[in-house]
Length: 301
Image (tube, rainbow, N blue to C red; front, side):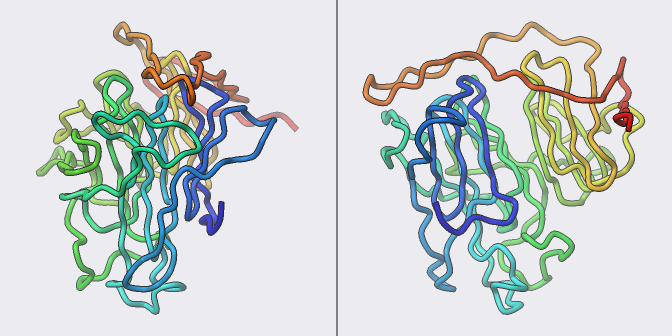
């Protein structure tokens, strides 16, 4: 794999802890965990036709054989695009395709999708619906250099920060909402799907909505108004870990949850099968919480 971003997207398959995916110019996989052979390239994102520079993966998600990669080229208009907003271009690539069964380490089924309706901004995170790999949620920010907002004359900037596609990335719908209950108009940095609940980390904290979007509220109490760059559920779905910028790692425990059906990886051809071995354990160090509030505890020195 070549040309990774400084913050290289790297994901583990929740249905098989041995199945890993990483992204740079290429999307690469391995099916033997941390040991064994190296990553094998599955898809090359190619070059930006306008600038002649490579496309680079900015976000990934994996669910069984299904993979989505958000990319940009150029990602940073300051250092790569000669301060030209028109040099920025994002995109979505996936191996989810009707009638096609992907196999790890091959480019079978891979294609770059039209992504109609998705603003031309930096793709910060992707979340696949475990019950339907053609349904995928995407968050967008500004550019790779996040403290610069898109210029007024930048093409295709659009509005909104959370989007859903139900046709594997062909078209997208804005879930950010309008009016008083909309998602704050700041970069969205991370997203998880918990049953029928969307949870989004933004530059001003964590917010939640139903999968229909439109009406958002702050999740819990106690978390500072801080950039939340990553959020992840534990395998049970009862706890969520949030990584913030400069304010440490926080944990939220959900008071109750609906029954959750087991997630099973879709069937693959025998030549490229990935046995489902269950979700990987998540180790959380130095945190404790109860109810609907965020808590954090520092490790003793």
